[in-house]
Image 1 (cartoon, rainbow, N blue to C red):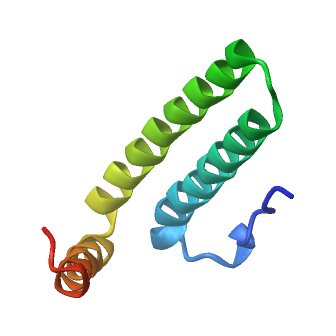
Image 2: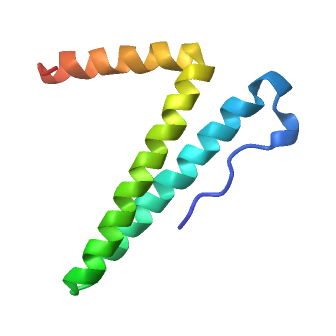
Length: 95
């Protein structure tokens, strides 16, 4: 099932609206990635599977675009992303 918009934009402060719009864009693209990868797993046709996986990959690029813009708009988000990366490195022992 696809996500619904988890935000009531009428209740968002004007200064936070763009950040919330970018997050909703990310959610939509992640939903698309999941959908296309799931559809690819159901087909036995290599050409159709390849098509779905190629489109899913493009959606991952879109996620990256939204994330890059969000990190420019929300410095706290950028800081927390870096903290999260460090925590994963500590847990896994890998960088």
